[in-house]
Image (cartoon, rainbow, N blue to C red; front, side):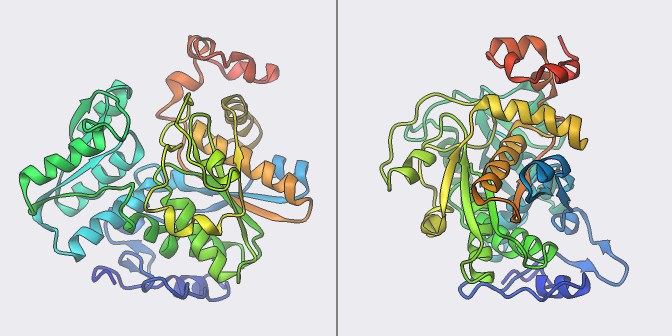
Length: 381
């Protein structure tokens, strides 16, 4: 158990007048970061990670006859759900003696994990080195540097290539040596999955009072899907169903539908940080718990970005919108009267220059995906 933690989520559930949360049988002791429960004061940035609101999506709930709920992960201090994984991989490295004061955290990331790590590392006194594909926007690189990270954009190559950004991150940590640096390895470090067994899953269970029928989300590292699925399955005695949502270019939907045949990755998606060409170590232990999967085309994700903005006032990125599409489709599959939850993993702020740009939408062949009556939100040239 992390020494830095003092409060259990079962206690949180009681304080919120919800039923105590049963801990998964095989999970480590549940933990969160130090919080002053008497005054509700978070002790530093890391204490503010998690315990995000659960939002009812009114229009889609009315359309489907179900309760469709989105967990507002964009309200984490670093702006995304990846704050949770970032915190846990750092705490895990501390607990295992891999990080000493003033040490260096090294990660390969194309998106929000790097931003989450930048916040966590600054708050805990570590240096951060990020390797990322050079296909990422200059704005993302600039933000990471603004947050104090050393950033190395490298050519985008497949995971099995020795110069993949993840492998370059690992080699950098090896050069610095044990005790001075740690490669946090978000894709296969199961402290990522543990974050969601011990925080996201219990929060969803408490917020719905245990009245949850299904959960769905997309995967990148798969920590969220695997961890939440593991907790909810054990807490509900297997009753809660779980579905993987997959964008174009990912192989996991076909892998699940085919009963385990892993094909070559082909094509791509406008969504960032999700989709995968392999089964990560975070996903592998819980793959058999999934009840199915859904494929979500980019056109539907883009349309949902605009619908959520117009109908719910939610300014979401494409990955969050994909999750909402999946939740709607699961609700339709289950029929009226069910409760379906997903994660609103981040906002649109980092993607606005694309998602609301007429030129970009036209270049991607996605302009027609925007409902005609919502084209007024395309405000960028």
